[in-house]
Length: 308
Length: 310
Image 1 (spheres, one colour):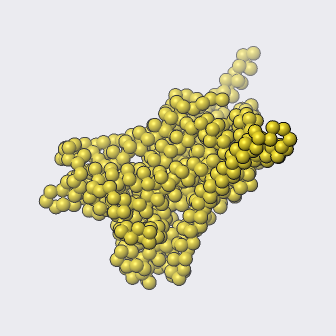
Image 2 (cartoon, each protein chain N blue to C red):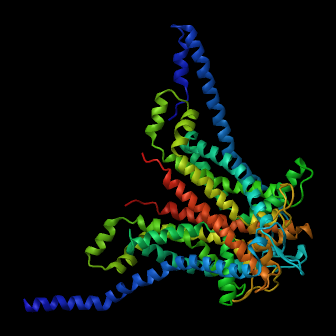
Image 3 (cartoon, rainbow over the protein chains, first blue to last red):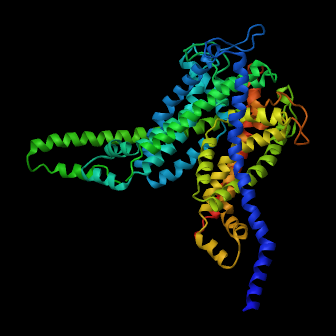
């Protein structure tokens, strides 16, 4: 008995010496790696806030939320963000006017009308569309869509908000379509069959049964799409120009918040200047906008989800 | 599910009882079926709209690159003369970026996924990290550029080197690798792990010899998708302050560099000065899209080959 115990403890000791040391070490290593994502978030928030604070030490809130934007003015640079916000809101609005109707109807087609075969062909193509880098869309907007629109609207400027807005909408279509389709697919078939049994057509089932049942997921997809449009950079940086005037005319050049960051940083944003810190103030506002949108989307899909 | 109103229509054609009422109903039903049909084609056309745009985009860019995309274009260096310009430096720059992004995202991403699924399953830490990652995934890429500029560029003094760009892009695509690796690890059947434990293997041995090999195809697919995202990403690199015209091909990770998407950006901006730059941009886009196409095809092949059930 004594001997038996000894052998067991010997084996236990042996195992723990050779292998368990690594076995105990690995979770710590994995945790360290997992914390990188948290550190990244903290890093983003910290860099944005610390440099934005330095910006607000030099520029008052009142000036920041004004309409005068002339960051490169040597004597008296001004940093009013309103022109950038109008540019961002207008381009996102145009994008939504393209992406929401087309994306939603495409989702309705794919989820309710299409056969399995059609779906298997169209969905991968949608994925390809979603995988194209935004810089390519920017080139397309500037070199193809803008000249095309100029034929229709002669007063259109070479850089304008309309064309990148439309192209941004096209870029977001796959996202709206696939998220909305997922929401519609989650609606149980029994509900559809109930409506069919009452003699409804496919359209009536889609609009009166499936859409209301999937509305939380669909609304969430819209909000995520807005967040995506607000954060989109390269399309507007290329095609909507860098005019810093406050205007609501979509045929004119406007700058978005993202466009400002890209233009100013690749220009002469020397470290330590007010202009350099203004990037972080604009970045912070952009971060807050998109974060709020994402939280709203999460809230909508949690709060209004109907459980069947 | 393939109901389209035919049955109702046929029964309504039997007008033997109460002809007037049936006549009215008939018209109403005909109209509803008609609207249904119209709606179907409207919905179909909006689905096809996206495809038409894709075809148009590929055709336009392809047509514009003809005559400009040749071997010389791929092997020459940048030049201010459009006829002499090439993207060799940009290709090297993009490859250099990938040389950093691939190992960094794979090590951090897969480790995070293993931690979340195998060690912290259903704990509060798991929920916290998961929420954090999903929020990180929706932060605009230009913000990651600001993080890279402040942290890697200025604070760590990496400037606008390949290393700074690579680290920035790694953080940007990290959520993609984590989420796809998580899915792959979650899909490993429990009985495989239990069999391993029953043989006396400890947790790390089980992960190394059972979980990782089985989930490898899924992990690779996610890794390839994240690489194809990183390779086309422009905004963070522009924010890092990549100089406009670099004539020298980078030789180390500390060198300044240019990459394919950056070159597209600057050439597109410069079309105001020289119209031919648009053709160069188009040719570069064709190169970039070809790389993406190859990467995605490999991902699809891996995904299809690995779809063997247990």
